[in-house]
Amino acid sequence: MTSLSRGEDEEERKRRVANAVPKTWLEKTALSVSDDAFSKRLFVRCYASHLEIENNENVRDWMYALTETNMREMYEQTWGWNSLEKRRELSDQNAKFVLVFTREMKRGEEGKEAKVALNTTDEDEDEEKPVAFAHYRFEVDDDDVASVYIYELQVEQTMKRSGLGRVLMRACEKIGCALGLKHAALTVLKTNQAARSFYAKIGYEETDHAPVDAHYVIMRKRI
Image (cartoon, rainbow, N blue to C red):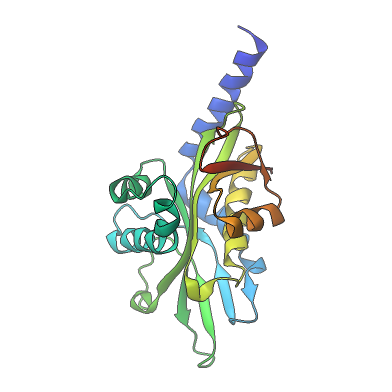
C-alpha cells in the first residue's frame, strides 16, 4: 500500500468519525461561539447550537422556503432551480445544521434575543422564529482531505448584515477543527459576487477544483 493510499484511508476515517459524533457534542461545540455573536445594531444575542430536525417539518419547510427566496433567481440564471433536489439535500441523512432563532426579550420592546436550540420544547417555543441557518456535512474533498463542507448559508433579509453569517461560519469551522479536520470548504455561484466577497473576507480562497466552464467556484479555508 502506498503512502497516498494510507493518507486517503486516514482522511476517510476522520470523516467517518466526524459523522458518528453525538449530536449533543455538536451542540456543545457550536454553543461555544455564542459569546462572540452580538449585534448592537439589532440588539440580538445569539446562542448557537446544533439542531436535530428529522421530526421538525416546520423548520425544514422554513429552511427550504428561505433558500428558495434567497437563491432561486440566481439558480435559474445558471444551472436551474430544482425544488425536489433541494428538498432532498436538506433531508439527506448526512446533513447537519446550525440554526438561529429570535424571540422577544422581556427587557424591553426594542430588545430581541436570538438563539439556536436542540429540539426546543420550552413554553416560549411558539414565540420563536428561525432567522438563519447553515447546512454542513463532513466530506473528503478533491485533495483527499477530510473537511467540513458548508452546503448552505442562508439568512433572512431582515437579519442580513447583523453578523449572523459570520457566527454560523465560525460555528461550522469550530466543529470541524475540534474533530481534527483540516479544511472548511464550500461551493458558491460565480454570479453571487456578494457571497464570494463575504467568504473571501473571512479567509476563504478560490480553488481550481471546479471545471473552468462551471457556473460555480469551490472555496476553501484551512482551519
